[in-house]
Length: 112
Length: 113
Image 1 (cartoon, each protein chain N blue to C red):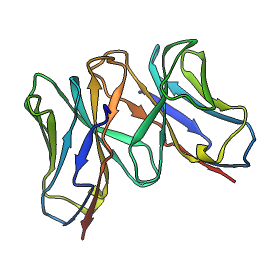
Image 2 (cartoon, rainbow over the protein chains, first blue to last red):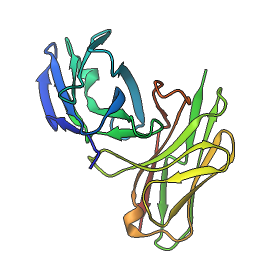
Image 3 (tube, chains in turn blue, yellow):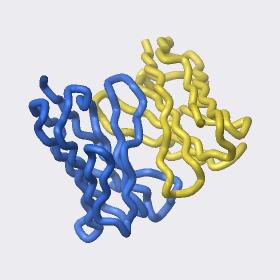
Image 4 (cartoon, one colour):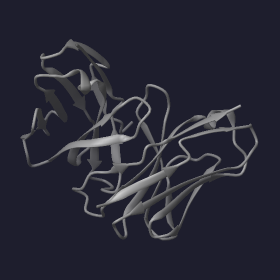
């Protein structure tokens, strides 16, 4: 299967703590994207990291990419209750760059 | 700015009835368009994508079909719905550049009775 995998499947933390989510994939990719989904809503793009980049920051988000290990991580610092959502990684497949290969997601609960 | 509209938000249909879900994009031209299905608590399954008018790629053989009659209109259809067609359907668009993200509609919750 080309599908990505994420761990943990679920994460529960206290407000102010950092949250780290990991993503692994099996195929070659051109870029790795992270998305957020609030319950019952569409997905919102958070950050994109290209295959020749190792780390990228956006506000409280930090993404790393290790193409040799085919893995990525998303760090959310100083979490807030409003960060409660599901987070998905998606790789832009090098074999067909019109398609994304999606992970199954991490459900994050930030407790106030 | 670009926007994507997907409707209806929820739909309850009997088994064997037809389906038509519509998605339109504004503020961009020649987008790539996508239909996904998401089962409860799961990731996204790509159903169809389109890179231009009348060009449809099917990812999963099933009783669903897609059409793109206009540049910024993408329609998901079925002639006879099955119970297994229940789920959360999401439409998305992206620019043709592979280093651009996808942008999603708010989804349609489809329940088959």
